[in-house]
Length: 481
Image (cartoon, rainbow, N blue to C red; front, side, top):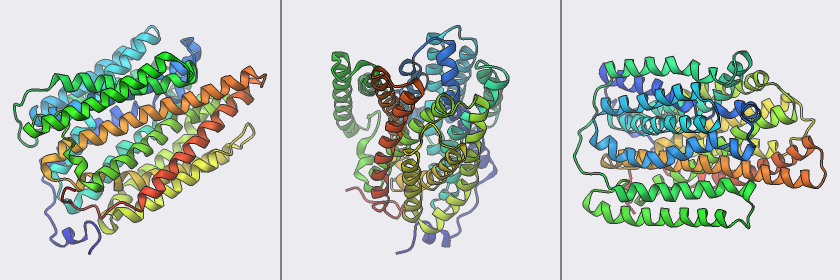
């Protein structure tokens, strides 16, 4: 049997037309801009905690709340993509994002800023599934690796350079400028997209199931809220367990309802995608990878500033090489995927990711910044070799009729995992720091103790991805199990 993409390449499918290339290019640029906001708060968080007078467990909602909103809204996008013309849906998404960005720039305090981030997230939630579905619809199988490499730049590089962008802007202008810088770019992309984006595929008129939307809100919202409460509520908190129980029951009822509705082709998310083994495994591994990426991306700037005493600009510059490395590697990984398939690339990526996190678990209050740079470069390399194979093999295993649902499920699960990763690692860090502080440890030593435990937990979780890499298939369309 040949490697993924090799047999397809023999037939030399024609290159994309100019119109199709334009649609994909505009969607890539727009998605890059909106995804950048997923980690733009990383370096700014210590500054915001001080200026807005909130604790770390509360302030982390500026990131976790953004991701939680996405995990609640994204399930609806599988429905929207099939029923709303591409151009109209693009306009709605970028208008929401631009409005949220303006509100964030003008926010007088934490509550308004959090609300603005929620509005931003509503726009961001639409863009990623819209991009992936469009690529899967327009691009022949033999060329998808290269295009998914470009999507990997959006998924991984935009969050990776978020700390650098925010660090530079914070140092020069203050936290509000992070949003003033993004706003004109978002507006320009909105105008360009409305002029150039055309509709892809056919639309239908099936009504939305409101019950599914309500259940997704309670399920995903309850689960992530419960995880985020661990650090400051304690395991004995009644509210914590009520939230977690509500989340688990909500998701269970959501799944049951989708199974019932998909028999009539009315599911908000068609869960028949999980009958395809490679899709299911890729989705699970992507969840772990996103939890690690966003969790570590939130903790690392706090470590650099609160423990190693770097300023926001130095923090951003230290993290820049990793983001650039991911950008340089993404097209190469895409081409290698078309030749080799997913497994070899995933083994390299997951081993590099896990090794870097175990290395980070040895950090202390005297760790040289050069070692932190080496860690971040190794982590970036690992993620670059992981994202493209996971996206391409997972969605490539599905039939065309399930692309929009597969894209929405991929995005929903990874954003939920990212929100949970941020909430879990920050909560573990906060709980351990509070415990050490109560026992009389100095502030810096207590902070370091909390971060050490968080890095160690991330390293243990990364072992799951190494094992899973060996189980990924060839990346070809499959028959349902």
